[in-house]
Image 1 (cartoon, rainbow, N blue to C red):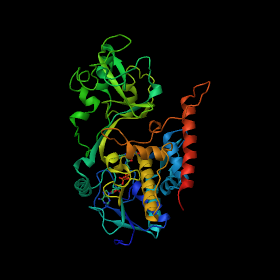
Image 2 (image 1 turned 120 degrees about the vertical axis):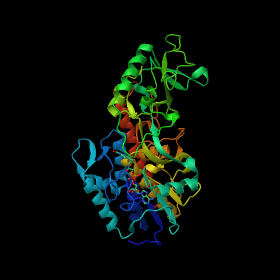
Image 3 (image 1 turned 90 degrees about the horizontal axis):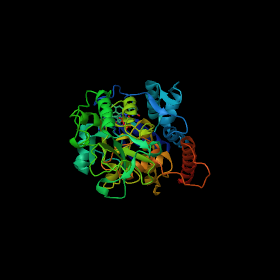
Image 4 (image 1 turned 180 degrees about the vertical axis):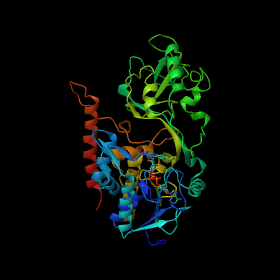
Amino acid sequence: MTDTPHAAVAVIGAGLAGCEAALVLSRRGIPVALYEARPQCMTPAHTTALPAELVCSNSLKSDALPSAHGLLKAELRTLESPLLAAATETALPAGSALAVDRERFSLRVRELITASPLVSYILKEVEAPPPCHRYCVIAAGPLASEKLTSRLQQTFSTGALHFYDAIAPIVAADSIDHSIAFPASRWKKGEGDYLNCPFSEEEYRVFFDTLREADRVTARNFEEARFFESCLPIEVAAERGYKALAFGPLRPVGLIDPRTGRRPFAVCQLRRERASGESYNLVGFQTRLTIREQQRVFRLIPGFARAEFLRYGSIHRNTYLDSPALLRHDLSFRQRPDLFCAGQLCGNEGYTESIATGHLAASAVASRIAGHPWAAPPVETALGALLHHVTASKEHPFTPSNIHFGLFPPLDTVPVKRKPGKKEKQERMCERALMKIREWISSLPG
Ligand SMILES: Cc1cc2nc3c(=O)[nH]c(=O)nc-3n(C[C@H](O)[C@H](O)[C@H](O)COP(=O)(O)OP(=O)(O)OC[C@H]3O[C@@H](n4cnc5c(N)ncnc54)[C@H](O)[C@@H]3O)c2cc1C
């Protein structure tokens, strides 16, 4: 296939985000040049020449409500997402999850792309946004080619891109035992901004021993352990000796446990994820433990016996932008409004999330071409909450996120006799989101 300078939009990368973006644009009547580097230039994780390859698991996670993953899918279906339709058509039996036959899924996406007269599918590595197109969506993924990433660094500064993520778990506030965890800031500075889980020496010893023995995710051969001193995995920090954590991420200095009136032996500090305090991030707990081990080991933190993890920790090779600093609410670059970013590169995490930002970027480009201002989906929706994390997160340093209820604003408080349970709250959040997404869709021009 040849280059198509007449295409209004270039999409770089025929992964999940790029294919979704190209198909959405073509359905709006906009010609697209979709560039894909494989098979000439393979990434270390892809093994085929097919578009929309799922590089690891074949599951797009839960498809059921009330779950944040199920909600994101329900919203994408309301928007008639072409990739979610392809996933549904090629689904395998997997309980409440949406798992697909990965080859049939990719073949179906390729069929959609090649059948569209408005999509030119060009197998070529793009080293810089091609100037012959009016707009460009960069969707080159977490393993974007080196030539493209160095060009992005030259354009937007070296600090603009991260190459590894170091993610700490997030827990639901109402699953923490508040009779143990106490609000306070070190040296009483601030207004008790952190929740603190105090360890006795015995609790610390049990936690330390269990952590040292816990199973870790095996790194892939392209994920050499290049850890920065300031964000060492908690289990690697523990290898430095018995007191390494008590003098490091679990240091108790400046904190007094109100139950004992004394400084604890060690403290796990929890930082609010949002002002509303519905969810907390475990400070310094970036980790490569397996999910099962995170559940087992981290529930040994005092106050965590019934902790509900909204996001698990991880560390992997992942190229992503410092998006809140670089991108506007419509996923275009502040410095280059003709350039948009989508997929894992823009700071979402996960297959369905990449489809979601691909869809949103296409919607924003289409509005730009039509000369209409683009309004982001409301933050009460899964799409809006994810987009808000990507473009407006206050987290420092910024880390990518999958969709979870901690990204949503809390429900309005209505005076009720009975406090709603977790499931009921999540059902209400889903109902609110689905109502808001329909309102958003009907407000879109054309
Ligand atoms: C090893 C690994 C395992 C993962 N496992 C999972 C998982 O199990 N579940 C999950 O939900 N998420 C997983 N993710 C995270 C993420 O959801 C996937 O990477 C997802 O495919 C991201 O979608 P994307 O469209 O942003 O990027 P991709 O799907 O990777 O698509 C990007 C495309 O751009 C192409 N490209 C790169 N550079 C250029 C260039 N210069 N010019 C042209 N084309 C280019 C690539 O070849 C690729 O086809 C994983 C990530 C990695 C790295």
